Image (cartoon, rainbow, N blue to C red; front, side):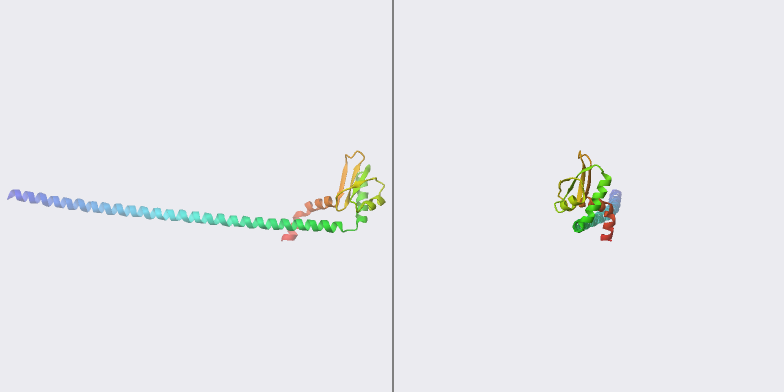
Amino acid sequence: MGLEKVIENIQKEGKEKITSILHDAEMQAAQLIQTKQKTLDETAVKKRQELDKQIDLLRTQETSSVEIEVKKIRLNAEKDILTQTYQECLTALSSLPHEKILSFLLKKAQQELPEAAYVYSNTRDEPIIRAQTKIPYGGTIDALGGIIVENKERTLKIDYQYETIAELVWERSLKEIAKKLFT
């Protein structure tokens, strides 16, 4: 019976070892599953954070894009209003009493260009120009009003057309005009 006890002990020890090995394997598997689950959870949190960041970035970009579009629309509207205002100024300027303005412009031109040899104006103002100056009339120009004066060689020219004067004043005053119109 000694051999049977030895076999029994060996079997018992084998079963205990198997149980111990299975228990250790189950513990290691549980730890591995727990570690993998923790890694999955951390990865899910990181992915969610990245996704939230991308969503925020897209919202910011979309908001910026909309703001830029609104600014473009506003600037175009302001530009249209300024252009309309400029045209209204030219119209108002052309309806002023021409004789006084032309007299002033002729005197100013003769002071700046004493050797003036030709004067030009629009067709409407030609009789006024001819009556107010001895400078030979050089011809008509396409303008709302005002004059152009040249020397004999036509190398020097003074441009006092209403459009030119209005443009100079407009450019100098544009910031102030825009401020008054849009604030």
